[in-house]
Length: 396
Image (tube, rainbow, N blue to C red):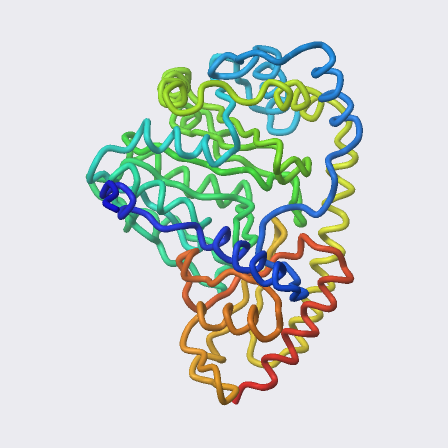
């Protein structure tokens, strides 16, 4: 069969690929511990589920407006004011079927063929592929564990060219867990002020999963706000991954452009999810904070377990629920049957011998690293790292 060349522009997400391989092994009866997927292992809080049940009984079952119900867009504005001290109106908000669609809308609305999008490494796997879909050019700024996987204003300035259209980053970061402080964002903002043609796409989906202090958004700078597109959603902070709801907050003209894109792809997001989201965003945040407390407990334990394994260097994540260790000291080693040449080999070795799934760092722009999630039970985390240690001990 012959397919469109469109499919050649981008790759399948490695996160989903590893999850699929794990499911295939489980179907064969193998006990696989999943440390690959970025999904909270908690159930959606009861008060949010009750709001969804009420919406069903109230017959919210028809098509929704493309940018989202007005009450939900108002709820997003309330949340942004409460949590981020940001003033937006419903006309600035577009609700989508997950934050991934929000990112896609913004990139397709802003980036033309050949225009450059600066992305600091490591980055979420889909960023670069969405830019490729839009026929843009990915420009990576290599960060390092020694600098907390964060870039400097000097590095940003050096990466900017006349073709630069967009800067795309996340804080807290998937996969590194890096969190930019208010001071660090201000310093980057001073660079953007010298280049008024550049937009800033700020992925803040892990906002509530922050272990070092209050979340900071680059949109709080009044001189930059109209050029910032905030992306957020309910999957991570409210354990609502399967409900599929994300949103942007942006200048009204950008919001209209994203609405136009979305109108041809999916139209409005799920009606029941939207009604549940109003409750999630405007009522009790204690369940979200309790999840973050548990993630902090797991983070502490994971870092202890990793330190027991020789040859792995692991910076401490400040947010999200991943560790992103450097495993390159194992490249070139073998157990007699499997030769570890790179991060992909490392991840596949752990999957097939330790039956633990992870995600190779190449997908995130860092080939020396591998991402492991701690969004799993403490029991599974303990057993998973026990298996990893035993499997790596067989390499020489």
